[in-house]
Image 1 (cartoon, helix red, strand yellow):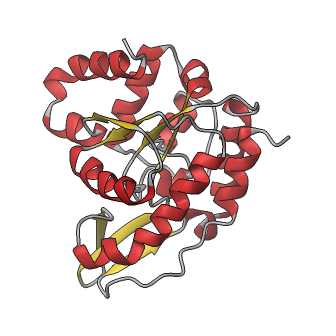
Image 2 (cartoon, helix red, strand yellow):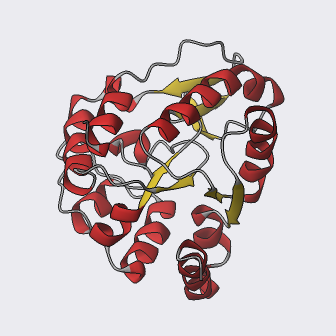
Length: 229
């Protein structure tokens, strides 16, 4: 029987988006772009997921260029990968504000070992999306930023969600990061019947960027909802 780690690593290694995209969008696959991403990603999952336990699903949007778009680990920049998880990446050094909130919350929950034993974080579109805004300038984009983009990536998202679930995730309830993300996932779930209740959490980027003064309240709310209290 494969461990949870082996299933995630296998999923990540075969990730490849071959669908169409609008002309001003592009997809970044960190596993193809940087050989060290595969190395640290495997170290992470072998450290925290080397068992066959079922986990609860926390659903992001799509990775950012500076978080999982570099480390291959959702909501984990290179700083947190090293300081919180003890895994050092030599070829890149990144700081991502969503990662700051997520690891402050994980620490408050009890630390990475306890948290990752119970939860699995990933995205319906598990690769980074960028948008061309001006010559030689690309910015992070979300799968729902453009109607045509969403329709083009939707089949890949559905297939990715099914593969995530097949790794051993509980589906009676899932935790969705971001209200707009939840709106689009609800549309998919209505068609595909992938999971039951969707519990919506404010997105870490929104909290860190706009609500940092109330950050502890948001951390407490995350922990209350994730603990089903």
